[in-house]
Image (cartoon, rainbow, N blue to C red; front, side, top):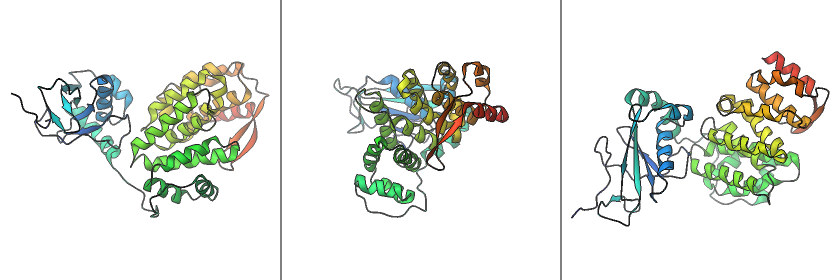
Length: 350
């Protein structure tokens, strides 16, 4: 008769700690890292093995998607699965037919793992800024958050979200404010809050991104600030949530969403251009012809921030005498901009 026992790492034989939410934020699955450097991810149902494998591979690669998809199985990494794992008891019962949970163990080749270790340590490091004030743990009212945003009390807003991450739910509601200035201020504040929370409660930020995308996909809801907020979060969190650039680009298929997507991408390109360059930014060239001056202008601004010149081959598709109102995030106001001036700036930059 086989007896239940704690799981051990198949690569080194050590008993492993119970999986938990690592401060990385790639998915909702619980995971851990063994002392030998192997990564393990739990699929409690046994039916999401593909997701568990991808999560393990991404954690091992420190979130580097390009590297993850280049690796060859058995040559660059090895994976081993442990069946009949019960996460509640943290035991493996080989004789049980009811326990369907599995653990996916994955270990990179030594030379690759050594190169990724610094990046992984950075992602795993939970740090909070020293200049954040101490506040009580409580949910703020919508009015309180609005007042803090209006007073530009960023440190206090971050402090209240660190103390009680549920305040993100209240902040999210302000993204749908009918006034464009109030909406944009909320978007910028949310990006700054997410920048700090991503290193402490990455799963909370991940949940927020998903809610924003789901809300935007709901035909009964407004995508006004939601898609821009996703872009603002990516702008402020480097590589951590860069995979969601693809989700933003998917919304470009819907003309009514394009300005919101493009403002989000414009903000990413301004501060975090390397992320956008890795995720299909050239698809934007397909949306130039017959688009509004606003859409064309934002695409030009994105390419200007990326310092790339591919868009210059499409100048015959622009009506360069057209203008639009571009939102200035420094002054929080709209300003009149001509497409011909943007092209001149782009030509100078590239």
